[in-house]
Length: 147
Image 1 (spheres, rainbow, N blue to C red):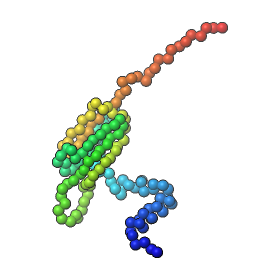
Image 2: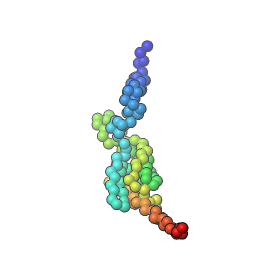
Image 3: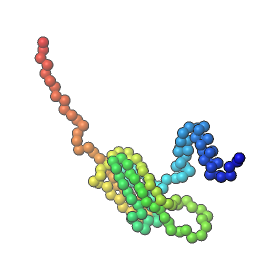
Image 4: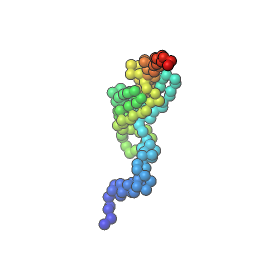
């Protein structure tokens, strides 16, 4: 019996491709097939990271939550342009709910973070965490008596 359910056929096809090419074959293509939102540019200096997040149509700053934990930046929220009138002819500005985690190039301070919003962009400034304790440990030398 041939299944007429196109989603089942797609799932079976995906499983066969995973089996042939290896586990999680399609994960490599996820960013191409389903781009991440929001889009982010990240810039690094010796002691700072600047993240610029594309947030078009932000009317309320509560539409985005920003969390930073040591070496991870997490963004949660919703991009909603509120222009759902008529039939979509072309749609390149991605919308929807997002929950995105981004690895940072180094640990950042929890007490020195700034975020500002202007012209559809969120600017997040983070500062490098420099350990307050030294990794330089003194080793005591013991004198052994000559025999």
